[in-house]
Length: 622
Image (cartoon, rainbow, N blue to C red; front, top):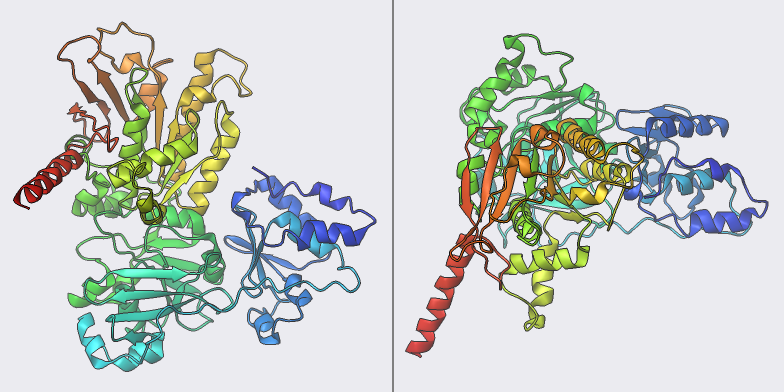
């Protein structure tokens, strides 16, 4: 993984400036910096070099703001596009450098490049006669061609008392699509250019977001001089707050609800000194998702309205005739320096008690027994899965993670034992429910559906040291809002690190690092580990996990696959919940394997039997 902060070699400028310009800038200006990471020292070095080349810059909440000289080089851009984001500061602050990833983003000329390439372009004048081709994509074209002004019927279908169509049209720029019965809103980036659209289907209140491949925008209502904003996660809440004339705050609607927040959206929030999270939480999203977004936006400026009966989502508060301004005024900081009294935790405790099912976590649909025992999949926990060699640990974990990903749990796979193509093929087969070897004509259909799942894969294979793996995971947590990380398996990270001590001490250090990461970044980490060499007739226990007792002591959950098929004629395979720190419930879940679907889910297998029986009956009747 190339680090954006390693920019010292760029200062050794070659005499042949024309060649260096073309190689380091013109050919790579579109490079997306999603793979880069800045540490604090590198960030300080970069700002020092900006001072050396006399480039004005401003340190923001999440981004370093500076003048985009790439805009000035592109003479084909209209002057209005260059002046949109002009600041009273000398030189104008147009471009943004993400302080965590180092991504250089200019919303005006739509340049996304590595920090190294951008710095080279700033340092080197373009060669004589060289003209850079415009990098900005054309304006976003809506996929809805029959948009009209909002009608009274559309206002009535929203169910918001007193709402007029003029408020929707003039205040927040909504439009109506009569054939599909949906409300349409434009998403804009930090320079107010349209980069996408968000729609609300009236029949089922379903929301959809459509944006360009490299841009991401927000829906913002309010004057540009306001320094406070209220963030909501759905359009209904946005409409309520935008039409209630809350003079002190802008109203911002997130593009992808609580699933993810692209780093391209952060420049649009830089002008706000205070962000109030007033989000709507459903069964698939725990209310602590706001905490994860707050870490991304600089939690020092973030306030949170915790979900309680007296402080519900905005549209529910309006329906119950609660005072919206009073609720906003009672928002409390996300970040606490210290919690020393019950009073400081009182609102958190009340929120958990009133939202106990959401606090329990995301429920599995394929494994209802896990819901009874573990209650749900929660962020910030550490799970250890172990079992004998060949017992199906990876196959089970594939389906386990697929179930969660299908419910919006963004997942990062670190498979060091098997290649990503084979792992992805297994996940696809479990998703479809049958092999596609003889049905290749269906591949494109299922591949397009599967590609929509929030699944990411690390490209490591074989033995890997801890440091680059942790850097990749931290990057995925920030850029892709990953909620679940799977390491398969831990033994592949041993023996190649900088540790020179005992192997058990090395493993303990690795486990401690993942434990700390899960807690700090509020991400669920699952570690697949081999057991010690036990006799086949003996059952595995928490003491059977390879290494010292630290692994099971640090873990919140310990799952053991017990396979008795090799030691008993009627032996079964089952998953044992050997540790459950959340509620203490222990037990077992039988594992019956369907080879066609590569599935351990009884629900999938029962559905398959019913389908086969129905097809058999239909063929018999025919």
